[in-house]
Image 1 (cartoon, rainbow, N blue to C red):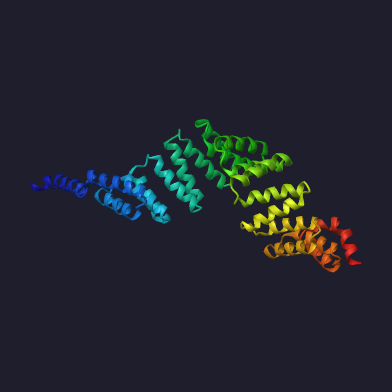
Image 2 (image 1 turned 30 degrees about the vertical axis):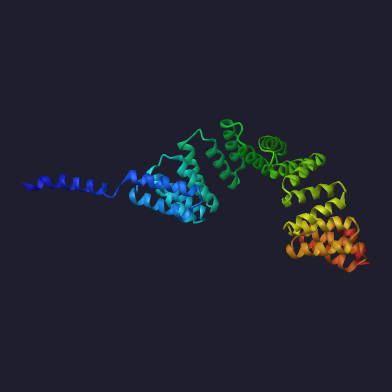
Length: 345
């Protein structure tokens, strides 16, 4: 007769055990303390508080979230992902938890997983310009620039003053070679934030690609005025000077870029070209040689060094460089043929 009471008693016992150890009120206090400590930069103390909050209430999704943020701050990305996943399991309808985990997946170059999380974030909060903008960013990372533009445009519809969305859409248009659109978007981004050197640099690059060199130049000037360490702006302005035959100015800009760390094959090749046009052939040859050392497949450097050798009356080395260039790009044979014949004499 006692068996009929056995199942209800066991069910009641399981409910009691499930509640044992949970103390939501105390957990919330430790969570609050942890957030305050984190904001003060006391990260070890904050971690202890978040740990206590989770120990007291395993269902405290906000504690899992904040501890995940702290792990990410400490560059422990795998643990951050684990904590965000716990938060999602507890509260699967919270968009910000998907956003947090998706952002870490971007950092770890797991773009497929990031896309899944941002799809969820947008699904849970369809009016968030932030989540739609970030999904657009993942599309861009996946090189789906058309879809990226659609997301950035939607984010701008939701927030017409969303600086990041204009900038991101501008970069996507750049990848699509839609330079007029790039100019439009970065003009708006500059209006919203005139202190970002990269905005001027990118708009200048778009102008340059439309051969509007004298529109590009003021943007590069503004870029280096805003951030004197932006090597790309010096390089881009240097190319404008090359294209407008201002070789001394080009040389100065490439010098600056190399000193700032842009000591790559392309920059040495470009500086060599400026030096050659100033008839400083030995220095030009030295730069072209550095370019070739850094990138043995940079055909332009062989062509350019060949001309500097030729103008220095070193015909054997000129011929050798041009032969190498033709071996890399056979299409150059027709344009270099006459020079190679002269060098061979």
